Length: 123
Image (cartoon, rainbow, N blue to C red; front, side, top):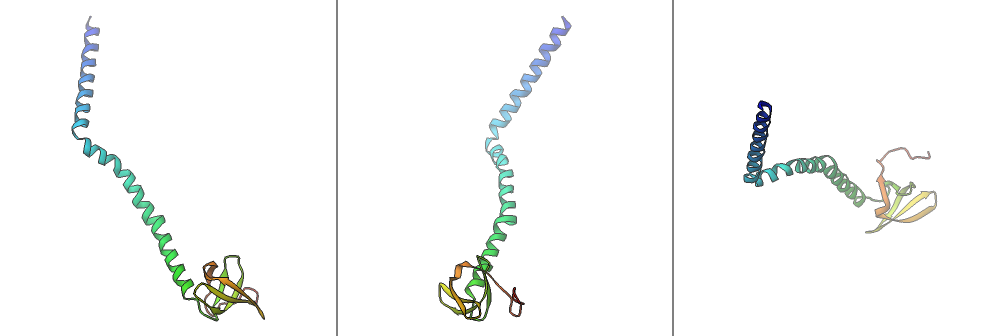
C-alpha cells in the first residue's frame, strides 16, 4: 500500500510541475516567441555579413571597373578572349584580339580589366 501512495504523490508532483510550466509559458508568450526568433535573426546577420555584403561589394567594384574601361586597356571577355580596347561607347566596346582583327563586344560581357603593363597571355 505504501508503494501505491508514492506513485500517486510522484504523479501529482509531476502534474503540478507541468501545470506551472504551462502557466509560465502562457503568461510570457510574447517573450518566448521573440526568444524563438533570435537564432533565425543571428543566422540572417551572419549570412548578411559573410555572404551577401561581400558579394555586393565585389559587384560594385566590378561595375566601376567596367564603367572605367578606356581605349588601350586590356580586357578579358566572358568567353575568355583577351584583347585590347580600341574604342568605347556607352554599351559597346571595340576590342582588338589580334593584329588587324577587331570585334565589337557588349561592355557588360567584360569580365576583367587587366592591370596596365601586365604581360599578355600569348606573348
